[in-house]
Amino acid sequence: MRVGLHALGVGDGARPEVIRAVATAAETHGFARLWCGEHVVLVDTPASRYPYSADGRISVPADADWLDPLLALAFAAAATSRIGLATGVLLLPEHNPVVVAKQTATLDVLSAGRFVLGVGVGWSAEEFAALGVPFAGRGRRAEEYLAAMRTLWTEDPASFTGEFTRFDAIRVNPKPLRGGRLPVVVGGNSDAALRRAVTLADGWYGFNVPAAEVPMRVAVLADECARRGRAFDQLMVAVALSDGTPEHVPALVAAGVNEVVVVGAPPPSPDAAATWVAELAETWIHCGQ
Image (cartoon, rainbow, N blue to C red; front, side):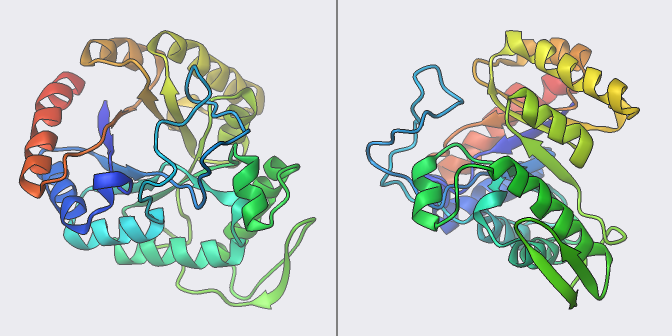
């Protein structure tokens, strides 16, 4: 069982000295990956329901600092040399896929092939409206954008024609380091997200999932693999629990999870943040091994 850490980019975790302290301590103490999420926009009184909490509200204040995840991870990459890096998640339909293909390949190169792209379709209609992107059809848009990005990562020159994007004989470089392939995981806890994880990606990132529900969600993933003729054991299956403790790890392993992601907010002092990471490692990583 790998253990990841989702703690960068928001609030005190958006301060450069705290990012550096958390990233270097996480690498030192054996965390497998640093995860960083995204919201371009938050609003004070959202009408949209947040799908990852019981009350439908996101816990992050609307006025909190929230860094761009690709830039935050690039900063973390420069402070480290071994630990993996992942977006958890980038809201793909909010972006231009040609730009994202360029940015993510760049991050993969700068991190020496340590980057995993986690993508989701988003839940906030207010955020999409602010960005001028239709909220309806965002799932189809994300699927097409991912196909277009994979074309850009593997072909040179590249051409693509779809419902939402098209380009002809363009060159976008650099390419990702692993043979032009960048690992992609799909975030989200719905059946649609699990289907996309199997049909379009290399794995799944479940966020704020109650521990008791993980086996059921992973079973849906495994059933989808069986229907599609795909080997379940080749998927990356990462889960951040809403109510998890290290005692849940054996059940997660039995369910087929191969990375548990610890979610937390670091303290504001770099020294305290490093100590906090060390304590999390003592609690989680020894159990995960």
